[in-house]
Structure formats: structure tokens, C-alpha cells
Amino acid sequence: MSLSKKPVTGMKDILPGEMRIREYVTGVIRETYEAFGFTSIETPCVENIANLSSRQGGENEKLIFKILRRGEKLKLDEAKTEADLTDSGLRYDLTVPLVRFYAAHTNELPSPFKALQMGNVWRADKPQRGRYRQFMQCDIDILGEPSNLAEIELILATTTTLGKLGFRDFQIRINERRILKAMAAYSGFGPEDYDTVFIILDKMDKIGLDGVAAELTGHGFSRECVERYTELFAGLQDADDTVAAFQSLTDMLNLAGVLDVEVKDNLAEIIDSVRATKSSDFEIVFDPTLVRGMSYYTGTIFEIAMPQFGGSCGGGGRYDGMVGRFTGREVPACGFSIGFERIILLLMENGFQVTSQGAKVAYLIEKGVSGENLRTVIDKAQQERESGACVLVVRMNKNKKFQKEQLATEGYTQFREFYKNPLK
Image (cartoon, rainbow, N blue to C red; front, side, top):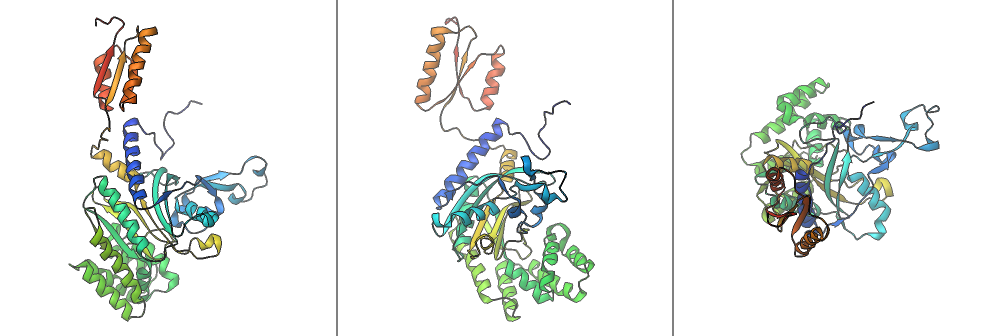
């Protein structure tokens, strides 16, 4: 059997040019988030399969890379179901591991706890532009803060980071799961119908309002319910002033007795506070069609909409009920995940280059330079390194011109040549 040079489908090798950008971006993310008071943690990439399959990860639970039991615990002959063969899996996001981490270490952590976590996750998804089966996630979460201060801080930290990376004119789309449920209840759908209705609504950007209506009707919902539901969205889409449309919708839902006024006021305060204090060029807009796929969300939800990408470049929301699944005690929690891989993709497509902080010098040494002469060259390189320069020491190729051109693409701007015969 011949060996393959290609990575596994959906995964990729990262060349030095991209790696420099990735390291730069992670540095900006970490520095900015730490300035907002977030502290770094790390969790294992492998989690207990029961945690990953707890019906909190939505569709992602169908995409788990499961790990076989090992050694004597792997009993192939006795296995009757898949559960008999697996006991763990690769994490599909960083939220489930964070909640397990918090449940295990609550007494050792401050309250509220502002967590920063960066690491690879795995999903057996269909690869496409900006979507891989192994990819980096960068999450910030606040656990133990019940007020909307958590949402405001998360949105400001994330948008400040994007601004530092040069992104402009993007949107933060925001909604509330309780508003989603109120709109469904107002239209006549029962609580048992919500998941189906929201899954269809989530396709709005692909199939349009008419497509949503057709799918809802196709699922057997009454024409009256479907028409009343779609009329709500039609009114919002036609509105010139989204703020006024938001106020009108939530006031109507409140009067109908399906939405508490505090939900409206809470979301309005988040929007107003972010708009008044933001440091980057973006807009925060109410979007009643925003659903977010994770079933663990309980309140506010939000996404980053990037016109350059044509889709979401990150998102998050409030998941107050999740910690209690581990501890039996409810803990408020809210998080935001930046779309790291898509951010990197956009930067590379735009020709982004990392500006070197110091001189990059290449020492090209002719093959015959050795002994005391070689040690003298290396000593010079060491002295330049101690003064803050990046110094590459390599043997000189036969095609010196091409070698220099390659090094120049890696950011080397100065070249020192050393020959066996100094007269050269």
C-alpha cells in the first residue's frame, strides 16, 4: 500500500506564510481579550462521549469524531451497538468542554469568571470554502454574570478585535430566543413545534420568506398560522427604521401576552450600549430571523455578518441552563466565538502581510566556509540576534539570486554573504 502525501479530507497543511498570519491574529486576539479582563484556560481535545452527546450541541452531535475504546475495554465480538465501541470523542466546539471545566473547578475560579479559550475542534462536516473538519476556535465566555453586561462586554471585545485586524463595515446581528418563541406563540404554533419552525426559519437567507412559508405548510402547519407568522417578518423586512420596527414588534408581542417587557428592554439596552461605546466601524442590528443552531441557547443570540465572506464569521449567545446539567445548580453563562478560519481566509485573500517588528537578516554562507571562519560568522549572527534582529543562517545555494528572491517573500530584507575567499 502506497503512502499518501495529501492530508485527510477536510483537513489541511499550513504553510509558513499562512502560519505567520495565524500567529499574528492569535496574538491580537489574546492581547485584546486580555485587555477586557479575560483569562486563558485550556481543556483536552478529547471529551467523554456522554458529554458530547447530551443533546446540547444541536446538529453538531451528528458530526462527532468518535474514539474506539482501547485495550481490554474494546470487545468487538460482544458489541451490539455503537455505544459499546466508543467512550470518548474529539470535541466539536469549546463550549461543552468549558462548562465541564467550570463545573469541576468552580471553587477555584472567581465569580463572574471571564474565560478565554483557543484551540482546535473537529466536525465530520462537508468541507467547503472557509469550513474544515479540523479548525481553530477562539472563544470568550462569561460565567456567573446574569445581567446583560455580559453580552455588552462580549460584543465589544469581539468587535474591537476585528477592528484591530482591519475589518470595517461588518454587522453584529442580534436576536433573543424568547422573542423567537413569542413570535411563534403569537402565530399559533405550540411549544412542541418550535424546534421545527426555527429550523425552517434558519433557512430564510437561502430560500426567502416564500420558501419558509412553503416549507412550514409542507410540514402540515395550518395556513392561518403560517400566514400570521410570515406577516411578522414581512413587516420587519419592509421597515426603513429597524429600531422602530423592533419596538413595534416587541410592543405588540407584549400586549398579546406572549413576551415580557423586560425581554425587550434588555435587548434594547444591549443594542443602545454597544452603539454608544463601540470603538470599531460596524453596525449592530436586530434580526428576528437569526436562530443559531445550538439548542443550548436560552436568551440573547448574535452573529458576525461579513459582507466580504457572504456569511457568518462567528457567533454566540446566552446558555444559562448548561452548567446546571453538570452541577444541578443553575449558573448564568454567555459566550462569543470568533470565526478564526474565515477571518484568516479573508486576510489571505486580501493579501494581508504581517509587518515585521524588527530586522530580518539572512546570512548566506558559501559551502567552503568552515572551522574558525564559520564560528566567526555564527558569532556575528548571535550578536545581531541579541540586539533584536531575526537572523537566518543558511548555506548559499548555487542559484543565489533565486534563493534571495524566496527569502524576500518570507520578509528578509537584508542579506550578508560570506565566502571561503574573502575577496569575493
